[in-house]
Length: 371
Ligand SMILES: CC(C)(COP(=O)(O)OP(=O)(O)OC[C@H]1O[C@@H](n2cnc3c(N)ncnc32)[C@H](O)[C@@H]1OP(=O)(O)O)[C@@H](O)C(=O)NCCC(=O)NCCS
Image (cartoon, rainbow, N blue to C red):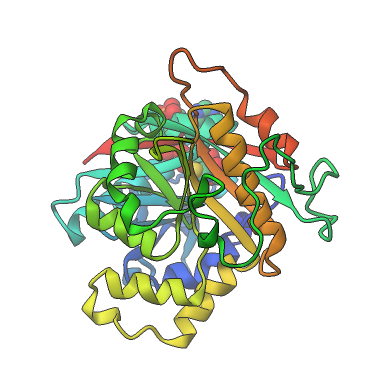
């Protein structure tokens, strides 16, 4: 699998996820193989196969020339496609397109009700984008990924600027201690409680940013649909994953962020609430592996701030939270394009985030195909 080592300027992550993808109970690791007697001579599309590794015929006369991972999303509405890599020597011969077909077939085979296949591509990856378009995927949303590091992590700070508290004129967003819910009401920014569910649903139903996001939030680099159902919002709130900013007087939701602050405790609550009987007993090993993956990073996986004030207040809270907790050394922030309501001041998200020491890393486009 040497061809997966240096795919991008920064390298690649395939070797890190290989074992997890291989043993994934909700997904399949696909490989495309080519018969070695065809290599470089007469190889044709018909000589390639894509199959889960356990089903392939292992033979010295075959060579793996492509790889990808398909994952059936928890609510079984969609199959997520990721990690498509083709050996540079065999590109532009239809291998990735065959992998896409096989991944879709796999998803449909698991559950014929799955209605969509989804994938993301970096905006700068023109080849990947045209591969998806050529295979009937449509662009659905644009998201931007930002990162910010604490002072003690010099390597990570892109522009040499660590995340920092930006003092807001009205001093909102302060987090005095580890019990942030105690801020509720007074500062206007807090983790949401069960009393906020209706307001949150009403806010998101009206939000043009939510529509433009593809109605999604991010989990482990997968963009999942967020159902505006009482139970879904309640589950997020139970894990302290929704931060809201309220309007000053009326106490309605004026903006919100969803975090993926996955502690062991959160993970266990999520599993219990998912109603998945088989997984009710979360082993410490599973919880540990989750913690290891997300450790040290305070993730914002959806951001919706229609006004500059709501954005500044949310960020004040988020940054203070990350800085005041020894558990985090960086912030990762995934945000859809912010759509500003008419009559409200335009702001540039990147400029505002820069004031908090959080810089833009990459733009991603979400692609969807009905299947
Ligand atoms: C993107 C990638 C997987 C495509 O693999 P591939 O096997 O060459 O793709 P296919 O042969 O199936 O091509 C399908 C379509 O993609 C587009 N495409 C592929 N390579 C292209 C290129 N170099 N320039 C422009 N379009 C290209 C074309 O529309 C092509 O259809 P066509 O050949 O009929 O015109 C491969 O280039 C790769 O491994 N890149 C590095 C990793 C990567 O970026 N992965 C995607 C992450 S989401």
